[in-house]
Length: 451
Ligand SMILES: CC(C)(COP(=O)(O)OP(=O)(O)OC[C@H]1O[C@@H](n2cnc3c(N)ncnc32)[C@H](O)[C@@H]1OP(=O)(O)O)[C@@H](O)C(=O)NCCC(=O)NCCS
Image (tube, rainbow, N blue to C red; front, side, top):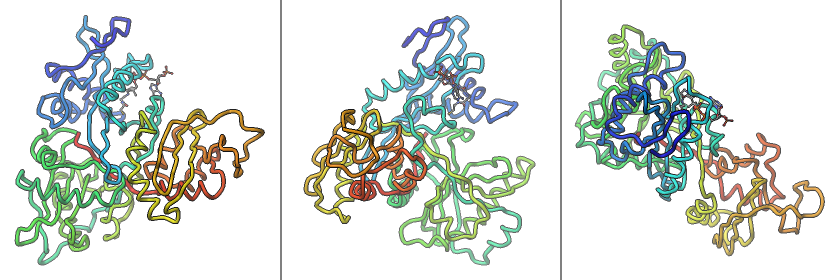
């Protein structure tokens, strides 16, 4: 037992023997919004995760709250571990997921209690960043800020599309991926990763798990298809859900190898997606309405080569940085590269960033980041603060309310956008302003870890 939560409830780690009960719990609690029935894909996903066959996850990284007398699970969550990269620097990331409490037990702090334990596990594992794909606002309570783009992307309505993209001699065709494709998939996804600030790299093992490791019915499973030339040379891949969601054919990922034309691939790929979506619609006795590239993100090249008819608004990952100065120290090679390539090359100075109750100080000497330390804005400067330039080095160079600095650090919003959204995001004059713009430019990220 990890904790006695009172009222007969205890918190403990899950074991593989919980597979059936935990699968049924998650299918029930994490069903679709207003859905009359449980979600079998959550059951399948849970079983895959705690079966012992997942590449990085084991049952003892799942938490359950239960009433041992009745043997009924009333709340649960899991903590995954990943390695992501920030401009090439590897970061150890923890991802809380599959969080739920049975309706009768809500709003009495069960998830809060599980997060306390999960955050302690995360600290033991040395995570430098935590990330959640979760319901709106809720996780802000546990120290998270929405600070990394998640999904969004173009939509193409399908009536008439199949005929429009049909080619007499298509240059490419699609086929199911096999384990033998893992090297080309890993190389192609690594090439695509260069487009993004934050990525979740997939090695060959991760790709093999994607191709054949998951139950077909799992919420996390995708069909992986290779795009190949008529001579059989792999030029790219598409990853899509193997059924329709309502009238939409959900496409998670499309990438092509270096040197391959997106435009040349587009029609054969769309023809495949129309044909496959139609087949899924026949199976489900429904109709295909649109191709929904809902996870490509706003910076993806595919949206630029075809006239799409709409787009889905992106969502955001919640991020939490347990030790921000430590994270910034790890990122100093990136910050120094940005400085060196800027008008601030060789700069010497200080950046005191206030988050109003705490902050961080970066000391820069000759273009190198000499130190990054936690810094608390002293309360003793004289008079009011109008954010005007000042010789008093007790005043912050810039201030960001709450956790909004994370939006800048992770390239999610530019300094201008933060200033427009938060009147209490302020910079003290042009030097810190320009320096912050150089050190923390807006940049697209894309993260879809192996779940
Ligand atoms: C969202 C959910 C997980 C919350 O579980 P819970 O056990 O009620 O959470 P807690 O009681 O620990 O909540 C912590 C705090 O948030 C509040 N809270 C609970 N649900 C909330 C919600 N949906 N939005 C905002 N605050 C909420 C609680 O009242 C509590 O406040 P307090 O600390 O001031 O007392 C639960 O409602 C649930 O399972 N919903 C359906 C599935 C779901 O959406 N899961 C999340 C997937 S990302």
